Length: 394
Image (cartoon, rainbow, N blue to C red; front, top):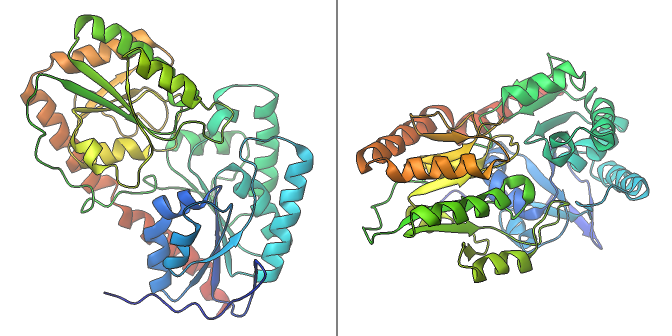
């Protein structure tokens, strides 16, 4: 087993990290959980390139796991729900203080607040920035004052970035059209990528007369959880043996979060089965017959890629991100956004399809992931972008 680089270039003073070496990359996301679950393989690849990785994120149960990977964790509180200008300016100051201490060679930003406030701080210190727009979130689902503020802040924060990665062409084109980025900055990635060796098809769970639909994601209104539950109510009237599972965290730090009490109420009504968030979703995907994501908008949804990699047919909304993964009739079905009736129709169509059709969809999805969404594509493009920034300086 390859030994991770020893982290001796930094020393802690209280909870602060002081820079001791220039071959350092800072990665910042709104949670340590996100970094560990979605960027771990990128981090390991960068460590093999000789980089020390510092993570700036709020502390959570995954902070220690990042340390076990050899990542230097520097706690940074981020209010994910808040839109207070005072708190955001304080966050900007905290980013600037942290980056001034560490002085990394490159800053990697993900999610809206690190992308805006972390990038502004890095630019002010002359630190090269690579951003990843993994999804546009609530601010772009609704066209309101918050949307206009977000556009202004993105323009301000991204204009000096070296590279801005997008996970689908629709988001990239929107940012270019709205002059939030220049065309020469924008590059496409196949999401965060999937390890097809880790997400392998497994033997079917066996026939018990039931058909299991599974939605994986945080319990958010914008993920279409409400429409999923209403569709379950409609489908069960025709197919009482159908089962509808929800897997993910309730009471999430998001303005569109659905409470655990509401989820429990749906369970009590017999509409859904609730499975709390877990570290390994593969057993749950293997036990499902179809993976569903009725989201309002996505970057490139990992849950659909995981389902496809494990050869499961998919149902998703016809929105950016989802339609980049689901190819109707080939590996799944699309339905109208925010439309429980349309989702229910797609579910009934999946139930009415014969086993051979569903198996073919799963096989096609697996082939698509292997061809187009392997995580090595993502890792290679990051390594290439970082090298292009630092090698001229060496």
